[in-house]
Image (cartoon, rainbow, N blue to C red):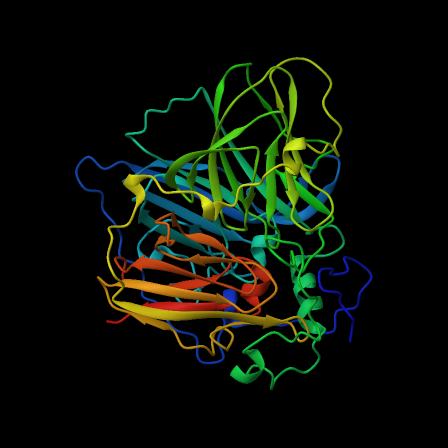
Length: 492
């Protein structure tokens, strides 16, 4: 048995004692696997545009900027290929699985039809190695989204890519648009994400009897560190050797070029598996305009937090020079960096620390919604407890007292306003994500992923307008795979 500190997973030289396959994201089950009928084809209505793409999931070598890693990716890049459409378009995306394992694709944040949601065991059978799957759906809402697998810890490889849904009615009052994808990276550095998960879960020894509601109802404070820095407590379970912006290391950064005075729309996506980032652009102020696709009342800031699975859009007017765009991993060492270049001049050092990181930092939940993005005011028809619990040794996470596969689904009725009363009983912040829907915070802010702080409660309201069987889970992929997931199901 290996001793593991609260935040650190050793990234080399460790013998794995066990590999655990849990039902959380893998689609496996302790009972007979469900069968799924072939999804009905969608036909475009008159005047509807059809966007057709092909995506290959494959093993490949990636140059992160002087460091080459063997990994899995969509094509030969990470992030993978951008898919772009306009709200109301019909998307037809064929995923070819050239990996040596099952996979799937989840279209994160899109309120799509249930059969296209990409959760093996819940909405589809996994895409077997050597086969393909056609995802067809209509993208109803404009915004910044991304796509990634929903099998095991595959998200912590190079399998992620942006999905942008344009608003045909938006004026586009900016000169340039840049998509910025943040990531924490371990794959191909002597370890894989599966090794990391095995080290975490393998430290528990025989835990076959420890999944009961009694053992999972609260934190085992003897094996957890206490507290952690505000506002998010303990930062994560994995120490990563690299942090990336657009697939590049800080020493060989992506360079985004513009001209002084130009107005730029940044679409920022946190595709990381275990890391909250603090984002700042040196010597600039950012105006946050959207979160998770929905418009907010514009908010000026020097820096902001972004949790795993969250997306923020910001406007910035470029200065004259070379400026660091930095994503600092919350509670961890190192950083990700890109460069904004509008003129000649020397680039700042790879370890540059913008002053904006030391000023007030915006928390996304403090944003105010635009009037157009608010849910119509209405009292909830039903309420469900979503209690988040877990422990490090044995490494187990749960919702409502049990891991996914043992907890009872949240059953709801079509047409209801449903309140999800999230209560975080742990010392960590959990980015909670609801599939197939957005929800409203008490302020009215619309999101599909929200950071629930340690030892705190947050009630969100969901309009039950998209029937099917959906997943609700923590977007820390290691917590999800170790049990912090629950199904949200419509009564037939």
